[in-house]
Amino acid sequence: MALAPLLPAAAVAVESLKVDAALPYVCALPSGPQPATVRITAAFPERASVGEEIRPADVTTTVELPAAAVADLTALKAAEVRAETALGVVAGQNGQETQAVWRGTAQPAGVPAEGPLALTTTGDVPVVTAGAPGDLAFTAGSLDIGLALSTADGTPTGPASLSVTCTPDKDAEEGGPLATVPVAPGPSTGEPGGSPSPSDSAPPSSLPAPLPAPAPAPSGSRDGGTPANGLPRNEATGPGAERTPGGKPAGAPEAADTPPGTPTDRDSVPTCRNEQATPTTLTSYITGYSNVRKLNGANVIPVSCVFIEQGQPGIEFRPDGMHVVQKSDASLFYEGRKQTPPFKATFLTFGFAPTTATLVLEQVGPMSVESDMLANYPVYTSDAYVRAPLVLRVLDARVNGTLLDVGPSCRTEKPLTSPEPDPVKYPGDHLVLHGEGRQVIPDPATGYQLTSGGALTGEVTIPAFKGCGAGGENLDRLFTASISGPGNYIKQIQGQTCSAGLEDPPADQCTEDRQPLVIPKPER
Image (cartoon, rainbow, N blue to C red; front, top):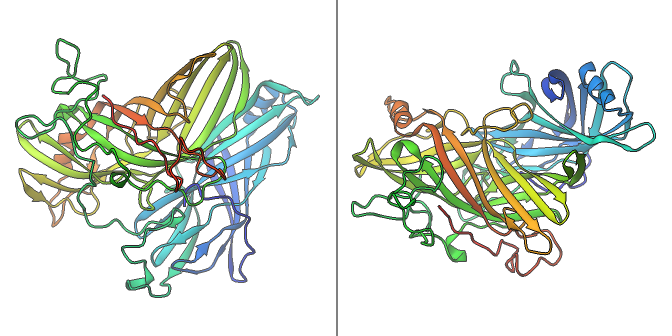
C-alpha cells in the first residue's frame, strides 16, 4: 500500500467509524525538542472483507506547535506560514505490518506574536486492501512537517523553509492507535478464508499475508568468490575490510569481476512494476555488498526493487550559495511486501563451522531519500542521504549441513543502526547511506544522482537477535554472538531509475512493461 496514488476519497459508508485522536508528540525544532499535540480525524469503515478497499476519508491532521516554535518563526521574521505534512501510518494484521504516508496541505496561516500555533492540513490518503481475515489496526507514527515561510510583505524569509520532524512521545507505547477494522473472509478463491491462490501476486496496495515458509534464495542471490573450501570470502572495499599489501581486500576478486550468480537478465530479478505509479514516481533496482565484520567476510545484497515518490524541490539561500533540496519517500517492494527478496549467506561461524542462512531485510518504517545540491555555476555538487529502518530476519539456517530450527520470529531486536549526521532532525534507529555527486558544466554528472543512480555507502551496527529458536530452545545468544556488532561497511549500487508513471516512459530507462531497464551489478 505504500506510495499508492492519492486518489479522491470516496464517500464514507453509512456504517463508519469516526476517529478523533489527540496524540502526544515531540518535535525537533531549532530551539530543541519540544512537546506538541497532533490531532488526527478520519472516518474508517466499521468492517471490511478480504479484498475490499479500505479508504480512510475526511482525513485531517492538526499540529499544535508550542510557543517555542512560534518564537523560532518570529526570530526568522516570518509573518505567514504554509504547511505540508507527511504522517507515517502503520497498518498491522496477523503479526505483519506495512506503512503508508498520509499527506496533507494547509491554507496559509498568520504567525501569532506569541503562544501556540495550530496548523490543520487535509488531503486524500492511500487505500488499504487486506489479503487475509483478521483485525486490521491503524497506528500513527512519525510526522514530517514542511513549513514555507514569508515576511509581512510576502517575500521569503531566510531560510525560506523549515523542516520539522515529530515523533510519538516515548511514553506513548506502540505509537498512537487510530482505529481497528475487523476484516471478514471474502468470496472463496480456492484458499481458506478467501485468500488469493499462491499463483496470484498481491498488488502493491495490499497488506501482505503472513510470511511463507522458508524458501530457497532466488536465482542470482548466492555469494560469489568461492575459494577452495567452498565458502565465500567477499569483502566490501570499505572501512574494516582486511587488505592485502596491494590494497585489495583479502580473498576478494578484482573489482572488474562479476560475482558468480549475479543477475544479468530479466528472468533472474524480482518484478519491479508499480501499478499505482504517478508522474513523479520512479522505480529502480539496487544491489551491493555488506560486510559482516565478526565473520571476516561480506555478503551480496540481492537485486531488490525500490519505489521512489519524488518530493517537491525547494530552494534555500545559504552563505555558501544557492541550495536545491529535495526529500523523497521510498519503499522496498517484493511480491507486495516492503522487503528484499530472500537471500542466502554462508560464513565460517566462530572460524570453523560452515553456516548457511536464508535472510531478508524488512522495512519497518518510512524510508527517505534526501538530496542537497549546491549550485555555484558552473560547478554543481550534491550530497544524498538514504535513511531506512530495516530489520534483519532469519528464515532458516543450517550448521555444517544440519538444519537449525530458528522458529518463525527470528530477527534483530531493533532496526539496523548507522551513525546519524543529524540526530535531532532524524531520531530513532535506522540505516544511513550517503552518496556524493558532482557536475562541471558542460560535462556529464559523475557520482550518485537520484535519477541516474550510483554508489551509496555507509556503516551499520547489527543489533542483538530475538525470537530465535523453537521447541524451548533459545538461539538468540548464538546469533547475537556470531553476527551482531558495529563497524559493518555497506556499499550499495542503485541503477538508473524508470519514470514509470509517465504516459510515454523513456525507452532508455524503462522496459515495455514499465520496469527499470538497468539491472545494476554489486561493486566492492
